[in-house]
Length: 135
Image (cartoon, rainbow, N blue to C red; front, top):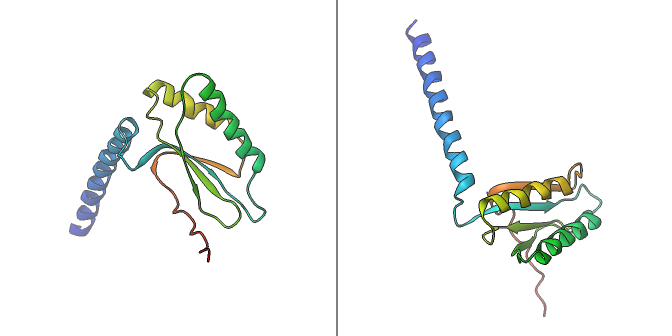
């Protein structure tokens, strides 16, 4: 009986901890740590290379936003052998509402494309692939 009660109390504590962790994640969406990106667009490969047309779509998407008068800075991290790349946006140029709209539009642009993954509010997902030494 003592062990069962102990187990029930442990479950209650775990639930309480989960709720506080969830609150922390929600707060992270409004104020990101310095090393985090608001959104990362990853172009992945399943053995046949990345989707070059999707990458061109992203370039066009960025250009259209630049034409609206907001130059969107981003970092590109080449990490795979088959052209895999992450394009990382902090979106500091935008207020929260515009940044949220930008992310929403990105998701719509690549909806259904299994070779494009969108990650929000995260540090870099991959390390840059080492470049071969030139002699």
